[in-house]
Image (cartoon, rainbow, N blue to C red; front, side):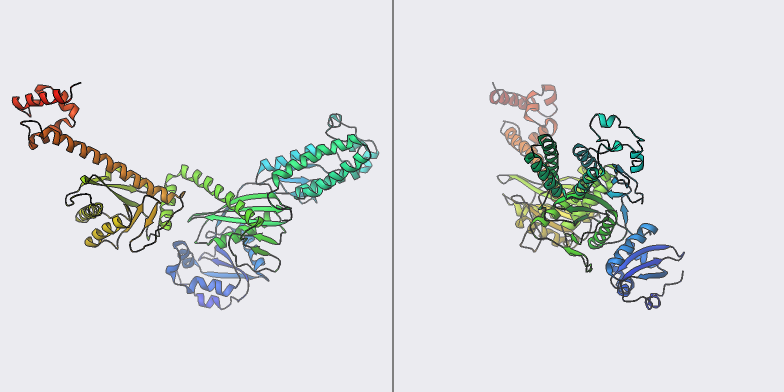
Length: 603
């Protein structure tokens, strides 16, 4: 395969906004991108150090054999064209917008005495469409509101003036039960019906305040004219409207015709939430999932998603609320990052929605494929703890002693973020006298990794020390003696505030209390503590019992050890029969043991 002469190809690429397309050796379109400056953007793929790219981008660049481009007038045009071409061609290395649902619309049919209903198909017949609605429940709530307030026809009769004048129709059961005012027989005028339609359009556009003001005016006039029946019917309509408004209004009604977007992403997926705000009410909302193909930044993904949303929802807003600055220059579009106030609340609402959607989706994926959860947690730990590699193997140390006696050290091992109990180990401390937790930690760490090096076992990627700076420093002494302090990452966790300490850093790292990284570390610490305490109590109990047995006449240290090995506890020794004891003790010792227990444990 001949090498691609990118320098020759770049000669024809201008310094203008546009869309570029990459083709492989089979002349298959493999990637589409947009740029404010085509020459600079395309050149960046070939002029940068290849080590700065991730694996997928390196593969993409290696496959490029032809470049084509389309020049446009503005960056926003490049934005829209890129989105359109990606949808049409779906190149292999472009991100995948996962949104295969057909969302419903509310339609006001273009006809005499228009019907209002929902549909999943848009037909260019001059009808007015509102939506699409990502929440079918919300759409039905709006339609139910309209049905409660307005009596509109539901039949599909051709109610042209000529047909009505000719008397072709008669009122049906819907008229008899009060669900229709009978426009088919001139019982309802076209002007009255069209006024209802205009009010409904205002509701669907989020201009519910206009409708409420109009209804209040009708109530006032009807009351002044003593038309209490009309006033009562409009009072019921007002109650429905105000109830709906209280549920839909989330910000000041002065905020109108604004788009809000937010994003949450990880190594594989990104999720983007969109809110459409009109007159203080959210009238449309949707969250989409994007599967990453290359190392796209959040800014690039958000830009693509904004285009998708604005096209789908036919947005004409001139202002978009975004979570961070986006380098998109367009005189007709204003992107703002709010710091406080009502717009900040809107952004926070969008972020809350996108995080919830992300959590639910990832939970679904992880139930189907548990390895995804493991990969995600390990990647999160790597990022949170500033590691250079995934912590697939983690070990945690904890010490226990009782007033300086019976010191032990425990090690628990997690592999792929799960306990590996067969790898748990205990250490009886040999070189430390008295309650010296630092020296105990130093000995345990040294013995653990001295043995792993001798047996050529792989070292963990992360070592966690239960304790603060002192214990961490002690552990580091042993790692330096062994020459592995640069090969593993070691951190200490202090119990009181869950601070994480790194060697040589006086300031601790604080993780979010709800973060999965901290939960895994706490689980390691608690498991090490449990495992250590269990072993410590057993050793302490045996030590106490051994001392007690040695006080019995005729029983020395060696005999006490034999009894403990065979019977394990005082209760079992006390309950043992003579034929069981005779294998370890002579008759004089058995008699002394029996007398001791009868005196010491008499009821």
